[in-house]
Image 1: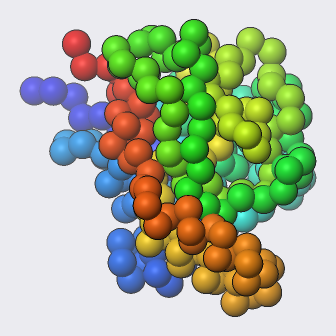
Image 2: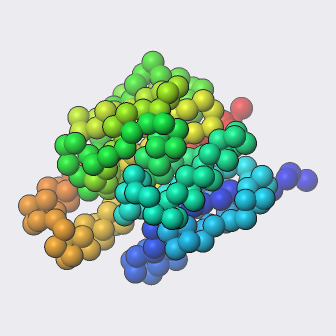
Length: 248
């Protein structure tokens, strides 16, 4: 009998009404991207102070840190506690996939620098350029490395300086560090491989209703979705290859 693989998702965001109604929450959005039959996926809403017992970390095969509306450079209690857990997972050489806020927080923990995005926020379907010489098969892309990948972007901060021994895997016209890896145990992505167009439209509408973005920003962002969509299947392959090992 094959031993059940166990994964843990650190959720840095509350469920939106749309995510709850449509998917049953963000836990299910992530599992639909990363899960396979027979997996066990547990999630802890760290933004609300929910954390696993540290003695239980050992039993998991891999970890995912989600996005968040909070800044990865803040020193709030839950963020500092999550930083400590990342350090422990690093010592244990566990695999950790960092998405958006997670991508930035791992950079912070590992000695990089995070701050406000120098060219401003992004809420759109973005196109990122893959660093061909870095994105070898051992970096989870498989045999054929694309020149570019489309991904949904939803952030106002960025990694300004990489930690030592981190390798840039992708960049864009807006941000120098769209994706990086550190050894075999961290893979970090600024965009959201788990999001689809409907989730982005819901976020745009909510942020717009709250008065945080102007009409023209919303129109420009929605226009990016008109003729293209995210390369979700390729992102799924990369993330699964990293967390679960590549198919032989």
